[in-house]
Image 1 (cartoon, helix red, strand yellow):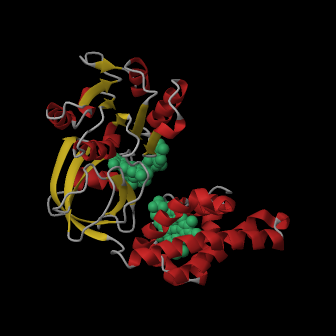
Image 2 (cartoon, helix red, strand yellow):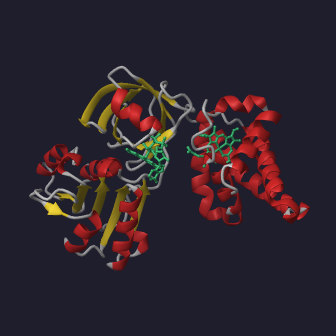
Image 3 (cartoon, helix red, strand yellow):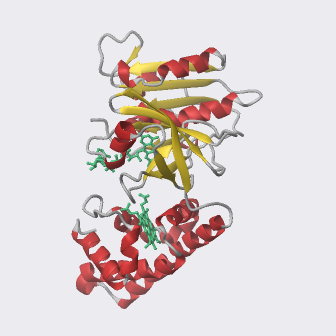
Length: 357
Ligand SMILES: Cc1cc2nc3c(=O)[nH]c(=O)nc-3n(C[C@H](O)[C@H](O)[C@H](O)COP(=O)(O)OP(=O)(O)OC[C@H]3O[C@@H](n4cnc5c(N)ncnc54)[C@H](O)[C@@H]3O)c2cc1C
Ligand code: HEM
């Protein structure tokens, strides 16, 4: 939507008319200024098919509680969106279009506000977490454990957004790497992204005692307990986190299906959690762990990209497949599975939104 100019127009319109909303956003608006604006345009233009969007919008509404986005602010955002569209569409903008967009925005906002209100009756807007263990597995990959003080019901495979006091109001999603525990602790695996605002803090400067804030759990990469099919898990780098949580969930079942876990990295030192996985597999006869490396000639195990390895290591048509990791890996995996004849409704993915350096 008109590059950087539209977000600039949108935010200046919003902040000038309603200065109280400025405090909800990061101190520096320079990076990713377009996060909300592009999402708004995308979501509202899809509001004609609200059925398919409802679950996502409910998650989004719950998620927005932690930003401090109270119901009163929703019309403000809608008015600034319509003002932005009017400005950039010039004479092509008509009162009918304005009416349609306002109505569509209103429908989307209603679902979000309602979900947020229901959620407010159930739990906090965000959870205070304390880091109780932090381990750097490679200079750019860390695993850490946090303890929260109030229960957070979530499904294995889901994610939460996280904020550090070192980067106020910068929220990013990370997946729980374990099935829920009674002691209210949760594990995370984070890979540092080049120039990454929050991943740098989480991998390099977090320590035992550090505090974090955590938003409501979201996401649909969750295990289909009713299918009865065997399972293929395809994990690229820290994409392992949600899949490890699913494997842990399966380990608690009375009659677990067979699970084949492909864990891939460029080099062997990127297989940062292999020792733990192998320990888990040693106690679970239904679990097979296959490490794969794409860019290291001397690696003794499987070599190649994950989609290549999976293509030669089995017939997955009767499996439920869960794949997670960097964008190119997820895309290649889905394309490969489709080409191999795995039905779309058996393929479940979470795309972390970054590429490997
Ligand atoms: C549902 C979900 C769950 C996630 N779970 C995890 C997890 O468990 N572990 C984990 O390590 N990560 C996870 N991520 C990714 C994580 O949310 C952050 O996106 C990542 O850590 C980068 O955030 P940052 O603030 O460090 O980087 P940012 O400051 O947001 O951006 C860093 C740099 O990357 C660039 N960039 C942005 N997008 C791309 C791209 N597609 N390709 C290349 N460069 C890009 C930006 O321009 C910028 O220069 C998850 C993402 C989602 C959506
Ligand atoms: C229909 C209405 C809205 C939709 C569809 C919407 C959608 C989104 C989406 C998809 C994101 C990015 C999520 C993320 O990266 O975590 C986002 C971020 C955000 N939204 Fe909304 N939003 C809406 C209304 C509002 C309102 C009313 C407010 C409060 C003024 C608000 C405040 C924020 C803030 C503070 C962020 C984080 C921005 C950042 O990190 O730069 N949103 N919104």
